[in-house]
Image (cartoon, rainbow, N blue to C red; front, top):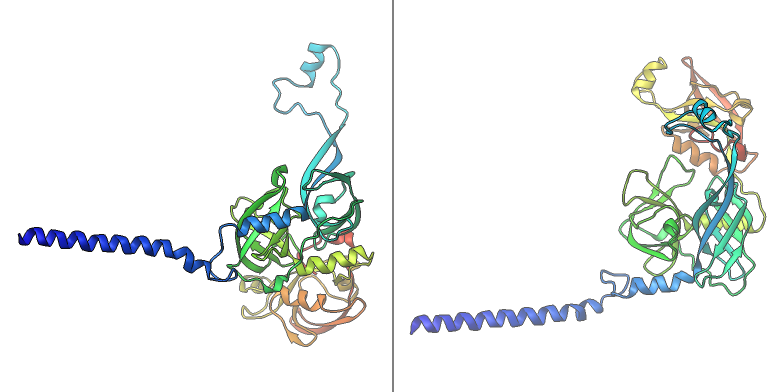
Length: 378
């Protein structure tokens, strides 16, 4: 009798626990639903709503170009001599023109047809075709481009487009939600979800600090928007890390907004420049230069001929220790100083050369576009 009573009590208690768990699970959505959208909880349809809101503001871009292709016997089981003997004619080895197409994305920034994309998308192409979400096709013309920031503005003859809402890229933090929209590999209106992995990320291939995200970005996403949980554009997708998954980069929208407005206005984007490549001074490099291992500064690794640095008397191997009187140890410090100054202004250098400290003055010039691939930095 006592055993049966114990079993009954256990069954009753188990039933209460099970019932409590059922009601607890059912109550979670009710509690979570009261959390604001910018808090922990995101409703199941929030991302879908963002995608639906942004898709009319994202276009697919198809570019076309021609390149010369040389016929090559490499990989074939016969060579040129065999071909001539077998067919009785010499093979036509003259280069042939081949049509090359590319796919990318664009972000609509005005109702009358201005579209923001990447410089590398439209660089040296013959034609640009834009397709909207509704399937309408337009030929686009380049309004302006900036190789330095990898940004470009194109224009289509259209009215009533829905521009994307541009947000504030300085307000984002690592861990914030991020949504990427574009046409990766030609698949238009593709939406991927991730987070902001890092901000102000320095990447060797670029002159701007990127936003890093793990939202899937693939070839073809270039020029499309990276948006926050409120549907505001915080970046323009531009690059992926080779041989890596979950590492994509976007140009901060605050930079994109400023550059695009100047390109549309037909203005020259000021790019302060002195024309030198540099590297931080480490103990190994200090030893090779014959200075003490604890010497601080930046080493000039190369000087561009006829550049402001060349004209100002800086030389390869100089150790820059002060810029405008301030101690420097990293190339980034020189970059920041140069970029903060207007074209035509001067910057003073204190450099260590052959054991002696000397002063040099360099006049900052506009960075010539043809030399933008020179060296690492300024």
